[in-house]
Length: 283
Image 1 (cartoon, rainbow, N blue to C red):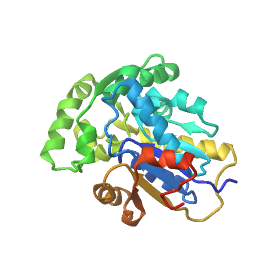
Image 2: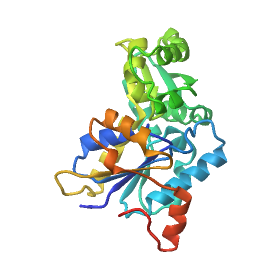
Image 3: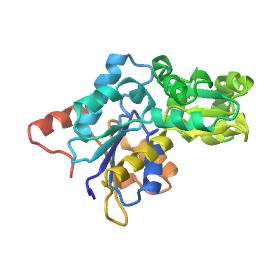
Image 4: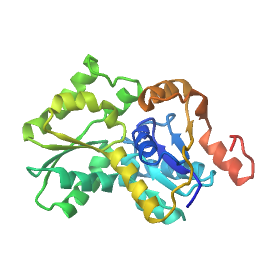
């Protein structure tokens, strides 16, 4: 039993796909979420910049007394997971390996589509995990750099001609390749699940990196006998830019009011203040 919160971070609001699944699987857990909305997206950044941001994200979350941290970001999971795990004494779990394992087990014809950020595609991490689980599988990868900014601006719904056009342009080659499984390799992408599903068709299984990552966290905490013993947990949300758009989109996606639970923070100042013993956000 462990009553400490679970920390979750992402470059923006995409990690809410993981939070939603964590809340469903582990309703008794407290969650502290950080969305780096002031520096989104991460996927087009250099490796060194991604690592720097990820280390700062973890350092901020660790100003809370956490039992585990979930990297609800495909880009960071492919780029910095091993480093972050080595640097921190609590479990740090990513979303890439769980999603790849699920895809390898889901495919029927051995053709797996992968959509992710440019950084995740460059890393080859999804392909390596899929090959380990299913050596015969073919992976058809496509970077989708416009998805994250469109999601962050709320362009996620059926009937929105902009997002439908972009989805069709990006995914047409994967549909033509005949993939029967599609990995949504960035945690923003499940927010486009309806539009992507409509284009790919009902016979293509969509694998959510955020959802699979949340299930991996639930398994790890269960194995470690580290689940909280309470009926209903709480959630707090921190962002590095204005709270208004985040709160509106988060409320719509999580289907619960979050406006009073979102706080804007200067992440570098918060880390420095913590080191000096000063706390600006309420614990």
